[in-house]
Amino acid sequence: MKYFRLPDLGEGLTEAEICEWFVQAGDAVAADQLLVSVETAKAIVEIPSPQAGTISALFGQPGDMLHVGEPLVEFAGEASDAGTVVGELSGEHAEEESGQIMEDFIIGSPRARAEQPAVTRAYPDALRGVLRRMARNMAEAHAQVVPVTLFDDADVHEWPDGEDTTVRMAQAMASACIEAPALNAWFDGQTETRQLHTHVDLGIAVNTPDGLFVPVLRDIARRSAQDLREGIDRLRADVQARAIPPAEMTGATITLTNFGALGGRYGTPIVIPPMVAIVGAGMVREDPVVRDRQLCIRRQLPLSLTFDHRVVTGAEAARFLGALVTSLASPGVTGVG
Image 1 (cartoon, rainbow, N blue to C red):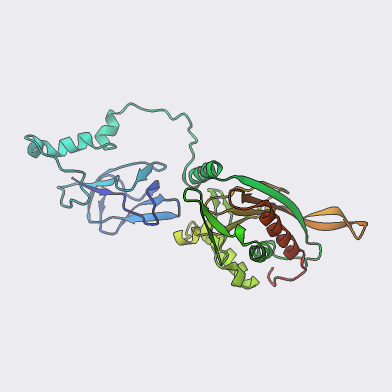
Image 2 (image 1 turned 180 degrees about the vertical axis):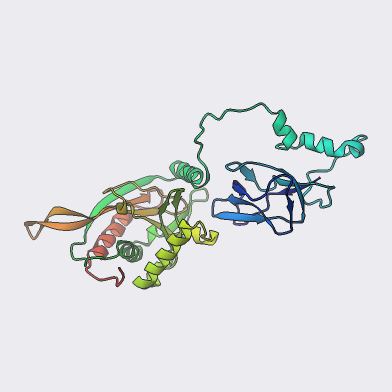
C-alpha cells in the first residue's frame, strides 16, 4: 500500500485544516489531479496527486487538522516509494501479513477508526479555519504583550465630502512613524531584541464571514493616494475571493483596524507580535467642541492606539498619536473617492 502524506507547504507551516476533498475512496486519479484543498495559517492551498492510481482511503474529514508528514491519502497497490510509505516492518510474519499489520497500526486508518469508540464533541460549533487561527493569535498576544491604549480625536471637519478615510489613515500613520519610529518595529521577547524598520508595511484588518484577515500594504510612505487605494482594493478583493498569496499576509510592521466603518467609537485593539503597535479608527461623528473659546460642532475621528509597553514608552506613543492627529487634521485631498 502506498501513502501520500501532507507535504511541506513552505513558510514554516507545520499543520493544515482540511477544507474540501475533490476525490473519494475508489476513485481513479491521474497525476497532478487535485485531491484536496487545505487551509494553512496563510492561505487555502490545493494539493495535487503525486501519481496516477486508485484511491483506497482518505485520512481526515473537512475541519480536521493534519500535521506535515501525516498520511493524507492511501493508494491501492504495492508500495514503491519509500518516501511516502509508512515505515518498514520486519519479523517472521511481516512478509505474509505485511499489509494487514500496517493497516492495524496506522493511526487514523479506516480499520483503526472503525475500532475506536465514538466520541461526542463537547463543543459542536468548534472553531475552524480562520477563526481557530485568530483564537490562537489572540491567546499568544495576551500571553506575550504588555498592552497600553491611548485615545484621542482628530478634527476632520475640513475634509472634503467623500474623503477616503482608510487612505488618509495610511498616510497619517506613515507620517507618525517618522515622528516616532519606535512604533514601527518588531520585538522578540525571548531574545529581547528590537528591529526598527525604515519602511512602513501596513497590515490592514479585513473582516469576512469566515473571520479576520490582515493583508499587508507595502511601503505606504512612498506611494501616492491613488496607488494606496488601488492596493487596498486589490488586497480586499483577494481576501474576499480567498485567493490572496501567503506572502501578502506576512511582514506587517504596524497595523490599522478601521472598525468605525461598522460602528463603534473607541476600542482597545490587540497588538500581534512581533509588531509593537496597532491603531484603531472609530466612526466619524459630529461633536460639540471648543475652538477659540467658542462652542461649535465639528466632525471628529476617534482614534485608539495600543502599544506594547515592554518596548515602547508612553512618551513615544504620545508623540506618535500627536503626529497622527496633526496629519489627519490637514484638509489635504487624497484625490480618490
